[in-house]
Image (cartoon, rainbow, N blue to C red; front, side, top):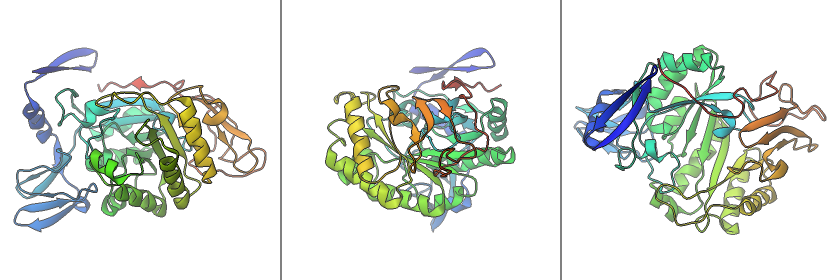
Length: 388
């Protein structure tokens, strides 16, 4: 038996779960019929889910690989009506460095994932239906309430994150419809295991898309639950479809940190577009991967140099604030003027107006505000949001 604390409106409730089945029972009530764009009728009561790259054929009473999308009497059900994580984050934490710098993003997440990464940093939400150690409590909410909270907290961006947003895309889009009606910008923080169908489905409302490109070895990708080629195809398609993309690689010693593998990652990104920001971030032992040592600053600076040699204009080492000098900053690719000064999640200065370099007039690629804030909205610190 395990316990989870849920705090709402200043009161604390203890929710008791006797088994995984109990949580499944709760989640089975927090669903909606999948959007028609994400389901294919396979006949004989079976359906094919196209919300992620697994393209699961799901028979009546069964779930997909993600364990949260399931077939109920020939109808594909998808998670809805709750959040498992809700927080105001600096947008740099997502990380998006070329979208609304210095601003906050209202971040919400649900439960479940279509991957099972041993180094997952959000494992308490993503792996809750696979691992008894992962404890997260769903909190009922309305889509309009999430959008209203973003407005109340002055966050111009709403992001689906903390679990894999592709498998909960139906509910994310319900929230995003409310958000866009309030003039907000929407984004996904994803593993990139997408399909053309789901990207077409979210494109009308999603502007920002962060992809984790975890390695460049298909054998390792299959250990995580996916395939390398599908993630690469997603990145290519995101660019073609006009999403603003930023890519993150968690640099893990002895797994993906060789010069050869980092060079292949950098060369691939540059082949799609040299304007895509590449974040190379520090691993620390966590969840089921406790063997490798933490990534060193020297290793991330080496990765950054590899990215620059491949022709990438924007490479950002991360997860070690202050360890990289001005490498955390955004420079004009034409005249090298420092446009945005950062330490960690904090923007110290942004000299661009309307997304233009004040020295040479060049417009770096990104999603920029006409009048950006001079200091971070939330001081560069995450803040918990309570549903009331």
